[in-house]
Length: 321
Image 1 (cartoon, rainbow, N blue to C red):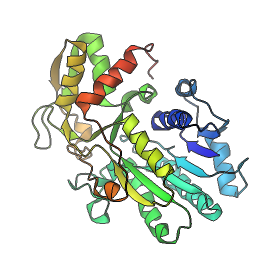
Image 2 (spheres, one colour):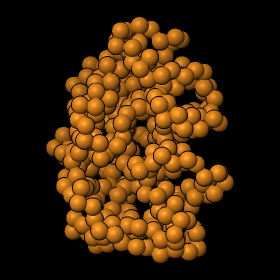
Image 3 (tube, helix red, strand yellow):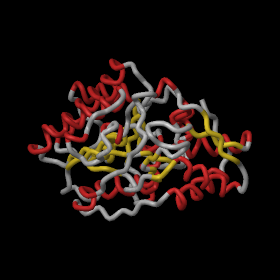
């Protein structure tokens, strides 16, 4: 059996769908459906069972066995809100929960593949999986960084696979439920449909209007990389999952405008509340990923954004909250 925590979320539901396509249906999805609209992400997926996050965590913390034999856990459940500053909540939800689950898996020889984040790098400007380049700018990034540090203590003695996936800016289908935390591609698309304009931040951090750069990675490519690790249990470590490109917000906006065949860009003042906690430039160094043997290719926004918008066009406008 495969366990996917956060399985009704963005990356999790896409992973479940990809597992189905690979012939895997014995999947236990773990999530918190307090925001019930997320169930829509699973309607076209085949799963063996669903378990609430709190019930699952009770099994983990008390050491009781989860029904059926577990081969691998994809731990994708977390609070991913980068503007969340309740440190106690983040440390409980992202750090303590992950530590307990890692311990549970290590004691039973269950493979453990989890979501880290490029937020651990902060503004260092060097995106290599080494401690010297990690300096998170927000509490979310710190919760992910601290768990990566915990994992590093256990990697040498692990008797089963342990993999951290440092996702960069992932975008694509099944992200609408994230609301304000959905990708810029999602927001730009909705803005253009609503009033014919795409709104980008004016210049900040030494960058001109809309020229802040991020490593945008399409969800299908990110999931393919996660599946590669699932099929290669001999590989452990922490790895960047990104395109290896730094593309501007202007490039994303132009790809969306080109797809729609209309629209203009409007630059708005950079928000004061993001000063000092915003990454103006990210670019995944893929050296370690390639050295591990992962061959997955990552599409640029010019190729992936149209594919995303094609997917959105063929589906009813989802509820956003």
